[in-house]
Image 1: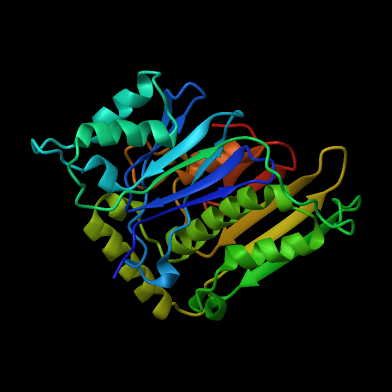
Image 2 (image 1 turned 90 degrees about the vertical axis):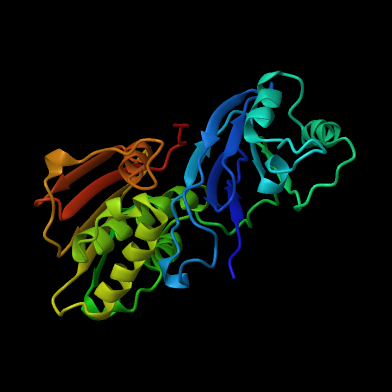
Length: 314
């Protein structure tokens, strides 16, 4: 059994979003006037297709002006057919958005009802619009800690036994870093960074897997089959090293280092993904979120610098 899903995490300011889409139609970023500004491509298979340990956390990271919105829907909306057997379709939905004639959920459903002309849709329909803007949240407790004024370092060495357990390392890192500094407004960005770095170090570095396998659905299954097999048979001596260094100042920064025991790669041949790729967006994302990104030691080490400042849209 599997479940198509869309998951949205909105930051405390109300203008930052992490969007995970699996098995649902592409979503849209709409301007205040309803015009489509960006298509949010579905990057993942439905929940339940992969084992729990193989869940992919790649997300769309968005920073939207107040009044812009994210529009998501199930395929019951676009695949509904009227009495003439004509499908509503994504092109018709996009024309409605770009006609400047309305972009509220009520507007879309009214157009859909008119198109169906009394014909009942065969599938259920779910429509969601999340608007960027200030949130009415409870204030943090007075005891919440600010960023410290002194520097510190944390280092981790995950050996073969630790890697074979395949635990959610990015979540642990967020928990430990969060115990040192109040990172609430940066938690989503840092988790995205840690998840991408750890996946690269483990899957591409230690296990030597190629992302190109994800070009097809069968390739996805093969990729995660090889991942599971590689972890089960991981030889002694493999590792992933992680180091954090907090730098105090007017603008606090976090130095991040990941190093793996893999064979490395030709750094000069790094390619950035296109919108049509189901993989490879990580480098673009890391480059956007961090002040600097540098590979060294034949691609087995990556150093990044992250500033605790407001992030811009990309």
